[in-house]
Image (cartoon, rainbow, N blue to C red; front, side):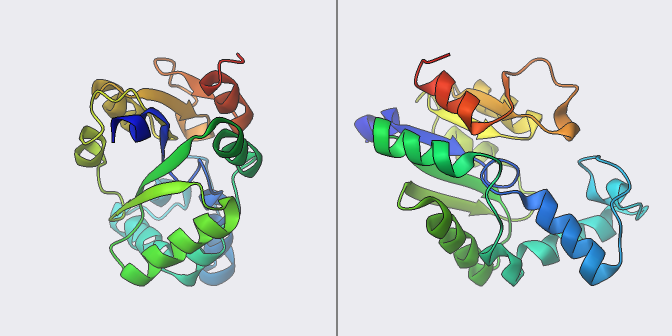
Length: 195
């Protein structure tokens, strides 16, 4: 297992591998008649709902819908995920907070495999909004790369000895403590030592 862990990249999915925001807000506009008002991370605020409970319900319902079959890749993710795998032998372990719905989890796995190929060694799919600390702690001391778009998750991974890279988004623009990346090209360059 030690040798395998040397070549594992831990990664979030939404906002890192898939462009979840685009599809989510498109769904809100087309299916619910709700327009995105701000770029805030909190959905209830960005949709002007006034209630976190309403926002959470919309996210939960979307995350267990058939939309999980067809989310599109985030920026240049396909090219550089495949390069890391094919040219450097890295494999990916997904740690994502999506849903407890088993069918939706299968949609997500199939979408990942269909989009990126056979680059995954495992999938940890947690409930919507669930903290990742317990799962990240299983990788403590491995110094695996850990990619997420949520600052708190990167900090948590770093506390367990992971090497965190924060995917830049409008919702994390004020984070200056963590190493930020704007693309998978940057991730590729950092991991392969080309930067």
